[in-house]
Length: 462
Image (cartoon, rainbow, N blue to C red; front, side, top):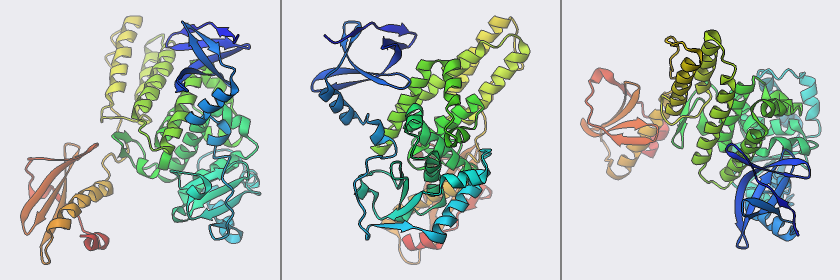
C-alpha cells in the first residue's frame, strides 16, 4: 500500500512531510479521470491522491509521466527547451561567426557593465568562449512555439529568428548563456519563471527602462510592449530585487543562490516555493498565449502581504514606522497596477497605518499614502500611434482624394484625447485610457490641441 501522508495546515498553505523533506501543495490536476494533488519541496516534487483530509503517495510511474506530459512539468524540457528537434539543415540555420559574432558579444558586454554586476569583463567574456549563435527562419522548426529566440542549454547555442535580429533579443539570451549549460541544478532551484523574469527585467533595464506603458489592462513602469513574453515575470523579478536589496543578475551569472535562502528564511519556505511555482506556470502560460491576469494579481498580493506583514514586526517607534511606510510607498514603483492610484496598495497602506497607530498609540499624521508617478506615464508616441490607427480605420472606408485631414491630440487632467477632422468636419473625438478608447463629448479649445503629423508611412497606409 502506498504511504499515507498527514496534512499539515500552515495558514493559507498545506504541507506534508515525506522522506524528511517538507512539501507544499502547489497544484491539482485531473488525469485518466483521477484527481492528482501536486506537491513541491525546495528540490523535489511529489504526486498524491487525496484520502479524506490526508494524501496518499502515487507510485505508478506511467501515471506520473502522463501528468507531467499533459501539464508541462518536465523540468529538463521547459527549462530553455533542452530537447530541441534535430534541425541542422544548412538552408534553414545559419551560424553567426567571426567579426559579426564578436560584435554581438562586445555590445552585450558594454551594456551589462552598466548594470553593476561587479564581475570583471574578461570573466564574463570567458563564459561565452564556446557559445554558438545561429540564425533560423522559423523557430517552430526546432519545436519552439511563441518565441523569437531561445538558448539551447545542452548544446550551448543561441537561436534567433531571422526577423528578430535585435540587440535586446541577443541581450536576453546571452544572460542565459552566461549562466551556462552546466547549471541545471541551479536553474531548477530558481525555476525557469524566475530566471526568465530576471533576464527580462535586466534587458528592460538596459534598453526600455525610461518609459512606462500599458499592457493587457495593466500599467507597467517600463516599456512592457517591447519586453516580449515575460513582462509579468520581469515585473515580479524587479519587485524581488527591491525587497531583497540584491542584484539578482549578479546572482544569476555567478550561480549564487544565497538570495533564495535569504528570502525564504525571512518570509517563509512556503512563500518561496509557491512563488517559484506560480512564476513557472506564468512562463508556461505565456508560451501557450494564455491570460495570466488572475495569476499576476495573486502573486502580487502574496508578495505584498507576506513581505510587508513581516517587515511590520520591526516597527517599534515613530522613526521605524516612517521608514516602513516610506519603503511600502516606494514599492509602488515596482508594482503592476490596474489604476493610477494602485488602489490595492493604497488600501493595504491605510490598513497598516491604522494598525500601526494602535500598536504605537500615536496618530502618524505625517504618514500618508502617496501614489508614485510612473516614468512618462502617458507616452506621446504610443498615443499618437493609437490615434492614427483609429484614423486609419476610418480612412480605409471613407477617404477620397483631395480630402483635407487634420489629426489632433489633447491632454487634460492626466488623460489623453484624440480628434480627427476631415474637410473641417469633426469625425471622431475619443478618450484614450488604459484599456482602449471610447467616445467623449468633452469640448476643447484649439489652444489645447496638438496636431499629430502624419508620417509618410501612415500617409501611404491611409
